[in-house]
Image (cartoon, rainbow, N blue to C red; front, side, top):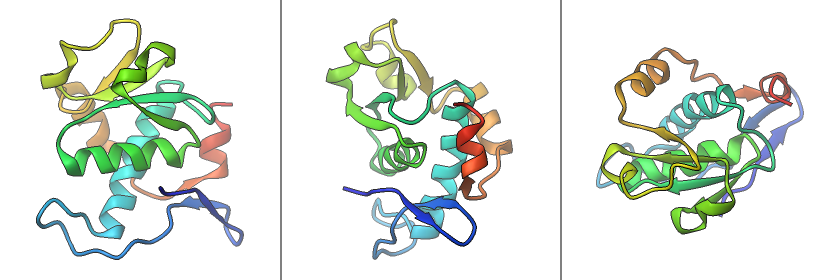
Length: 136
């Protein structure tokens, strides 16, 4: 399980490095994972999610699930399974799973057109302490 690491020199939140290859066979290179997770983390922060929140994950494609979990951890939140959604305020899912999920959770639907637009224009730069404090 990944943990957050703060780089003291510039106060940038990063995930620890994993070994891996570029995107192939459902695997993602560290640099790509980091950039993709930064974008998704910014979307979560923009919705009001933050440190300590429990965020339900109902994401089936393996690469998307890894990115979603990394994004949740980057903001200091706790990823939980979709089965544990009853005590969460936020969640991440896909259109194919949305119909089976509760309406009491604020679901970010990854493959929704409006989500994709916001994701593509958001920064993939590392999150800083300033980014994280903006929602607290």
